[in-house]
Image (cartoon, rainbow, N blue to C red; front, side, top):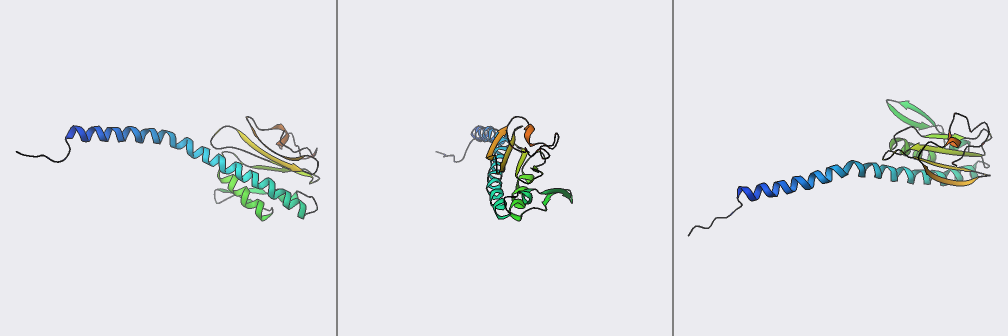
Length: 163
C-alpha cells in the first residue's frame, strides 16, 4: 500500500484561483481607501489650522495676518512660507494631500480668514474660516464656496468666510 502525501495539481490551482480573486477584490478597494485616508488627514489638518489660527490671532492683537501663507513652487514642489510656523506646517500637510492648491485668504483689515482646498478622494471642497465677527466654521462643499474665492475678491469687502 502506497500513501501519497502532498496536494494534487487541481487542488493547487483551486487555491491559487481563490487567492487571486481575493487579491483582486483588495486591489480594487485600495485606491479608494488611500483617497479617503488623505481626505481624513486634510480635514484633521484644517481643524487644527482653525484652532491654531485663533491662537495666532490672539497673540497678534486679533490680527489674522500671520495666518496667510505664501505658496510657491520650489524644486517642483509647492511650499508654504511667510506665515506663523505652526500654520506653515499645517499648510504644507494640506498642500501635500489635496488635488488642488490650498487657498488661504485674509481680509484686508486682517479681521478674518478663510482657507479652502479640494479633497483628493472626492470632488468636494473643504473650507474653514474664522474671524472676530463671524465665529468659526468648517464645512464640506460640492463646489468652491463663492465667499472664499480671490475672484470676486472677498478680501476687499472683508467678507472671507465659508458660507
